[in-house]
Image (cartoon, rainbow, N blue to C red; front, side):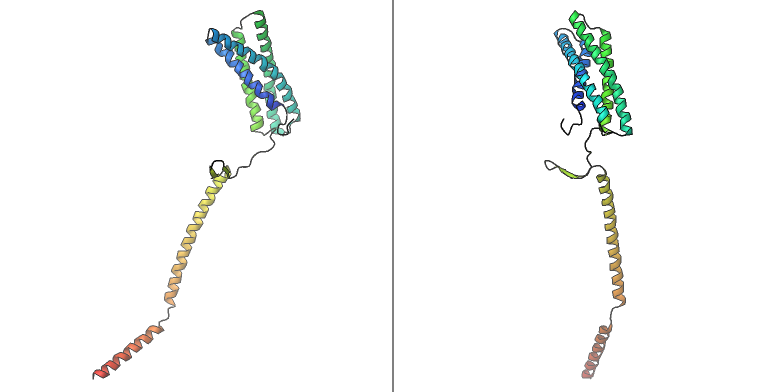
Length: 228
């Protein structure tokens, strides 16, 4: 068994879902067509049912092994048990329908509406089983080796960096805080500059201006004396 796969159940279950779903659909829609197309669809429907029912037995055995061996907690155990209970109905019903179909073909009898109705019921049971199986994996993480942590990374073909998950909200929040801090810093710088200007005006030395006035007054006096 490859390390990446916890057991054989994930492999077999895809064949079960695909083959049995195809069989249900073809048996149902064949009631609305006629001629050679109807015969061809019924042939495919029967073979899909037979192969699907056979592999479903293997899927059930692999699922039972997974149920008893995969690591889980209390919540995932409840979900896994519900998935198992739905699966039991599928494992019982479809092999019986496959036997019914094979016997009818052997005896040359046509399958009636009752058979098609049971196939539709089986399809609903299969859908519910698959849904609960998906929850076991994607909601509770059973059989998953690791879960990714959201971060910023670069995609191929120059997609560029972009945030994932909480990083986006964090980036937006941090960006807003940085803008607020920058605006506050600008305001503080303006206040400091204004205070510095007031301090320079209040402490300015006017002694040089007094000396200039004295020299101008002396020059004016000399000019007046020369004129006289």
